[in-house]
Length: 153
Image (cartoon, rainbow, N blue to C red):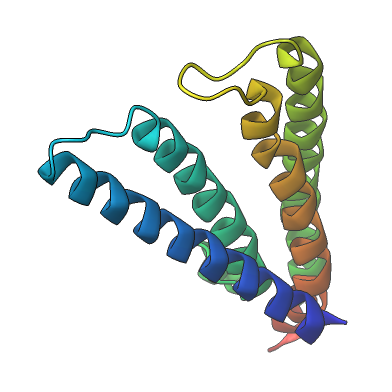
């Protein structure tokens, strides 16, 4: 399951990165030709948010985020696993809060449209609850590795 989820996240990140690169390149080319696209910077901002949040979820799965594992290793062996669990619980709590508040914001923005294209602002903001949920799944899949490290002498 972890490998399939990792591949799906990698595909998602690559898709958004390619879309962002193509969209920004098209914006530059059109501007050079004297036909500035009115929507390209707004769409680029949205794509950048998707790249960032989905990439962060991928980083969580690969345990590539900044951490301080030395702090856990300095603890007595019996305290390492409880401390690692506390740290993970704190991260999970934050991500659940982020997903919940992100979803609540979608309801508030449901009637608003983007400035340059007739698309709901809620669609653009959906990156937060969707990727927070992906981040939660990634953290859960990485938890066994975290606990294994905490148990090492």
